[in-house]
Length: 425
View (cartoon, rainbow, N blue to C red):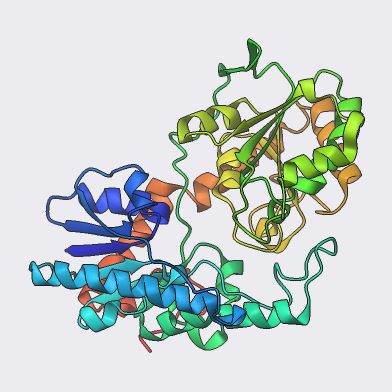
């Protein structure tokens, strides 16, 4: 089977799937990504990566509503030029796996009309009812809602031309228009529970010659970017009370000061803004901001954690929450739709109000005061990931089955547990 992956940040969500396909000598696996992003990321043995030069993006004079479309068209053109060269060199894929969010999938069917295209549909924007307007601290105007609605243009064009799609969770799938859901399967990316597992003997060194073990009270918070979308404002506001109640606890915060989702500040970072807000109330000697961590070091931090706090707007669910659960760390999550799909309060974790710092401090205090009593929740958390989201036994087999069915045109052999699954439209 010949497979082409297209993702500006390759491998992105395709890390495991591309590696599994490349490990089979019967497959030919090619990938396309942005030179500035994919070019600096991990290489997968057996995957031949080709990079296009980053497009210039939208011009400043373009109407604000359609800058995303212009940027997507420019990126789509860059991909089109590159895969035309691949076609001229004799490479014709059976299946193309593509993340359409940035416009890369706009013209793949024009170059490879006979290839089956499988899109990764991560998030369909809504002017109300999801992330936009969720946080009253950052109110949205009607203008914002209209801009967000228009932002779906690139995805809608891609949806119309793709043969099938994947969404990682049922809630994310439910955001797509009903007329398209019938050709989108729900399959999570997968958590390697053999690698991301409990480690009772773990120890992690921090700055100032501090070394922590599982015998220490360690509270973790992980986000690619420390921003309101992932609740950094609520978490920092919870810290003074939390550390007052737990005088021996230490907090490890993983993430950068960049902004991945939502609006950037005109000056400074959100982390600095909220630390300045609480001022002298916080003992910063017990709060450790690590910045970005490579995957193996992040795994160490999660294995070390006594309790993990995960907060998010109604938005894309982070791998880190499921990874924490896989290490049998007790997760305190926000009572928002993407989290509630995975965590049931009191069964495999605890849920709190996204906006209530005191409720977060209460929950953390309760967990750390009764660690043995909460062990059943930790065990159930890992069992949830193993049974429903394990990479090797659940998610990857479903992805490979879907891919092979697409390549052969066997749409009746799609995964059976997909909601509202339909035959080929």
